[in-house]
Image (cartoon, rainbow, N blue to C red; front, top):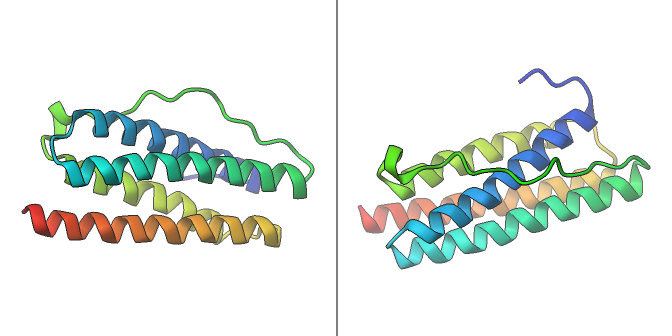
Length: 137
């Protein structure tokens, strides 16, 4: 990833949040595993909240607007992957990489705290997903 400014990094993070939200909705509609469907719906809500929080804090404290680029079509397909749990695990790990990169970047303290909070929520979701994966085999 070749990102030069915090603004570009935050835009990438917002894009990852939007893609995560859309992907979670897409998979939730297609999985037959009720526990996974519930986790995916929660993930979609958390990605939406993360994007809203990051935009709000950035716009308030940095004085520059970071706006969504529009609707993202999910890149996820159960037809290609077959295993919804493994597919979502890869998606969560990819999104967490953007959160980690943003957290490692010098950001205004309120924005750094927001990124950290949502990064930790993502780690928690990933741990829950891995427990689900262990239960469902």
